[in-house]
Image (cartoon, rainbow, N blue to C red; front, side, top):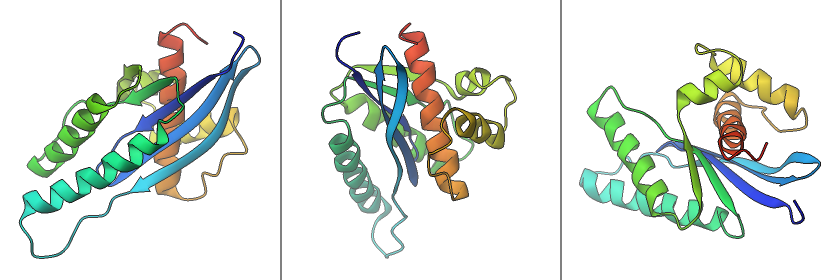
Length: 165
C-alpha cells in the first residue's frame, strides 16, 4: 500500500452521530480525528415534519463535509427500532448514508459486538476494546465514548470485510 487510505467511520444516530477518521498504511491503522455531531430536537411549536427536515439538512451538511478527501466510509447501520419516533431516526440514518457519494462498507451492530469478542458485548466492552487499541483517544464522556467507540470498531469491521486489515 503506497498511499495511505483515508477512512471515515460513522455510528449514525439522529441525536448523536459518532465519527472517526483514520489513515491505513502498511504500518497499520492510526485514528486521526473523532467526534460526535450533536443534533438536538427542536422544542418549538412548529410542525414535526418541518423540524425533522431542518435536522436532516443540518446532519447532511455536517456529515458530507467530513467525508471530503476520504477514500472509504465504514458505517454501523441500525437494524430496526422499537417505536415510531425511533423509526424516524432509523430512516434518517439509512437514507443519509445512502445519499453519500463515497465507497461505503456497511456493518451491523452484531458485527461490531462480535468483533470485540462477544455476540453480547456491552457498550462498556466496546469502549474498553477501543481504549486498549487507541489509548490516546478522548473518550471522556459517556455519550462521546459510546458513539466514537462504535465508529472506531465499525472502521475495523469494514476494513476487515474489505480484507484491508
